[in-house]
Amino acid sequence: MVPVMSLWVPILLSAVIVFVASFIIHMVLPYHHSDVGKAPAEDEIMDALRKAGVTPGDYMIPCAGGPKQMKDPAFCEKMKKGPVAVMTVMPSGPPSMGASLVQWFLYCVVVGVFAAYIAGRALEPETSYLRVFRFAGCTAFVGYALALWQDSIWWKRKWSTTIKNTFDGLVYALLTAWISGAVRAYSAAAHPHSPARSARPGSWPGNAADRRIRMKAGIHPVYKLQTMHCGSCGNEWQLRTTQESNNVDGKVHIEICSGCHPFYTGKQKLMDKAGRVERFRRRYSKKSDKGAPSETPAETPAETPETATS
Ligand SMILES: [Zn+2]
Image 1: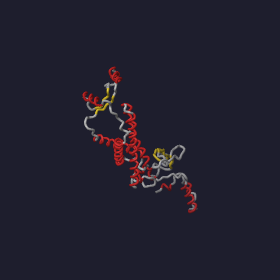
Image 2: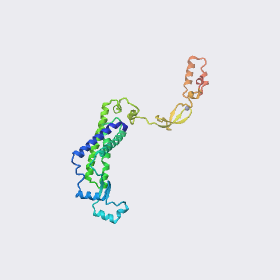
Image 3: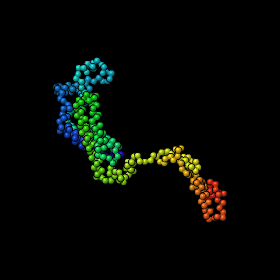
Image 4: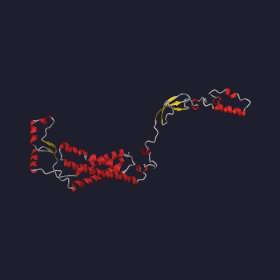
């Protein structure tokens, strides 16, 4: 994961590039010139609208006013007679692009933020140019193009215009994708100790987040709840562990636990199940004290007195 705040360079750069590209598309290239046409008898229509006192706003002509009135015979007659229009009346005055250009740039930044957010959330710092390209590009295309189709579906804007705008969106998206991937590749090359570089396999991880990303899948033992069983005192308890069961009952069997170990109990008693102490004593008594060999077998229950002292 890469935090979106750290991606302000590709966000701003892609907004600038898209801004320039849209200028070229609309001012230099000719294919948007046919988006809108000149109405016949333009002056008469304008005169009529002016006389009617139409103020800036969005209009539907004719306008039913609500779903119920759409069945009104008078309205249906107007619709049949036509022309039917969706009309946006702008404020009068010489064309001024300033406010629209500012809004357009901010909009490009917003699309860039979303592209950076999704690419940053989806990809780890160590990633390839092409993967950044895909995530940032797809997100930018969705932002720039797809919602425009609603205009043709509901408001009957010419599909040719919408397809041209979708093509523009594809150009903006490819530029955003290119910038995002290029900035990632540049920062990895220019800053050898950045996460993008240090997170490569084999290199020393820069921080805890890097280490978490670099964990290899499929090689770690399963950490799960297990029932532990003490063979000495029969104590059983549950524990999270990577240790596998070593018994048919599905539990992890251990020889001693804190419930019976003398260090915790304070009682210096130890079960000598294998009889090693006894065997040692027998051998010892044979070698060193041949005069009294029968002493040790008499005092060999499971608990030996030797461990009980000190
Ligand atoms: Zn125990």
